[in-house]
Length: 275
Image (cartoon, rainbow, N blue to C red; front, side, top):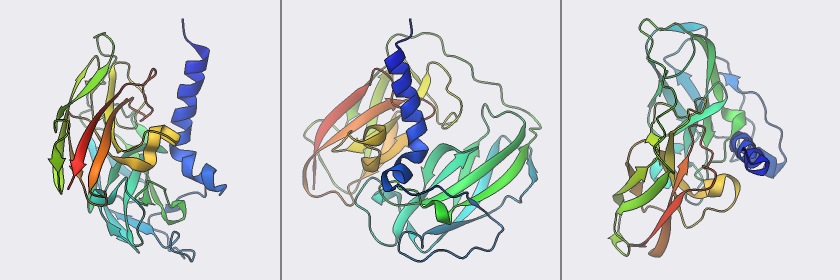
């Protein structure tokens, strides 16, 4: 039998992902500006962050099974190494949404979005400039409408076979290890199939991915402000940039395709020393 309180909490978590920062500030959420439109960016450090999108014309028909766009940051530099760390002027990354559902965070000049489990027809891609703590600057966003008409559609991914209760555990680095600069985190999962292609898509039972946080799982989306990134495989490339030297706790959080933590929560943690 479905637990009503658990269901309500899950729905709340999913809804909060796109709205959390605007809700905290009490600000209204403006519509994204079309990528081809001229835009007068509001004054202020936060509002000065903006993006432009090329490589996809408004109203274009996409026939491939992946959509690749080019993104230019305006007023700030892109850095995934700073994601989940303290905000810094002139530094951030960007989020990509498909039909207003978050796909992933990026800090590269191009972003590729899988059309896995995307129905043919009209869709919209939205790119949002984002601070290190994942606060989205919606005034600087760009959006492009397109039609998906695949030449060779991908087979739809359906529910995975039942494989027991989902678990996640750190494989490396080992507890107490010292890390510095770029480092690789490896986890082991059971009872769930990891898939980057399903990021932001309608949830498929038995599928999901994981988020890596540092020092906190509290606050909206289990500490989204301290999320270093997300992975649809068993590894993630982390960075100690912006983390004070000393002992820190890293958390691996299992989430569904829409980035909401599994219920009950499935979290692993490891203490590492940052040099």
